[in-house]
Length: 230
Ligand code: ADP
Image (tube, rainbow, N blue to C red; front, side):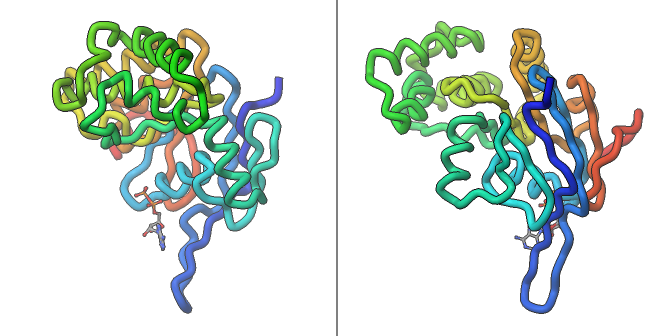
């Protein structure tokens, strides 16, 4: 079986005038369908840069990136947006929920943009909110939910389009330890049901909950060493 995601020799150079900085210096990575991968690294190691490339928010300076059987290394902005909307579900540290909308309306939002009709939107949002354990919180606004519950809503929103990959950038960075456990249990449950997950974190305790762990340092990916502290 070929991987759902494959990076070969990915480099990213930022140029500001005469100064250039190599944020990624040749990344190779294969992620199989149904895999749960964590990438851990300290601040400045290249995590955000890699996450932007993985999420089709940016393209590499050089190298090859194949996602769901398609070469996305050289796509235009518009093509990249299309692949991103179809293939990637994003989860962020800051939840990024709209405070005036209920949990259900927040989860329906990607379907509004995708042009899905009202009845189907509602049914799909309710189904995915139930799957993340929030069947009894659908009419609550974010301010009426705990941090862990808000992150569950944002995970439901990321899943509602049935993406190829769930890409979580520091998903527990804003949570207390109980809510962190709650969200990590949910991610493990989703993985057990076949979801492909890539998690980016600077926390060792979070990274070790995944199946395959890597560390990123100075723009290079390596195995995560046991006991490494970010
Ligand atoms: P992390 O997410 O691990 O903190 P980043 O990917 O944000 O790391 O940054 C990796 C390196 O690239 C850092 O040295 C950072 O200063 C540099 N960098 C990131 N974004 C830019 C940019 N837009 N322009 C110039 N340098 C950047």
